[in-house]
Image (cartoon, rainbow, N blue to C red):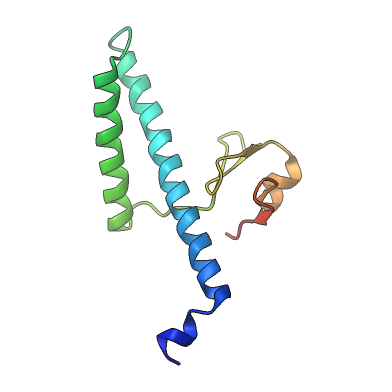
Length: 116
């Protein structure tokens, strides 16, 4: 089978979905780590300047992308909340607290069931 045959409309849609989910998951992980780093730094100072926050974002994004490229961070199409009672879609960023959405890894905004 040639490369042209593999690029059916369905395959292109699946590839696009995978790319969107991966980019979204990377963004969510960067955000999560930035918040954590900012909280740690605020423990030592009363407030962060815009330049300090930019520094944290740039450094964090670099680390997350390096972790991804090295295989140390595997993006997921969703994130289950620490309490296990919410799910955030990496594709659109929506968070649901509905128990069935959490159980079924479903995003009501995207109308997608996320596979493990």
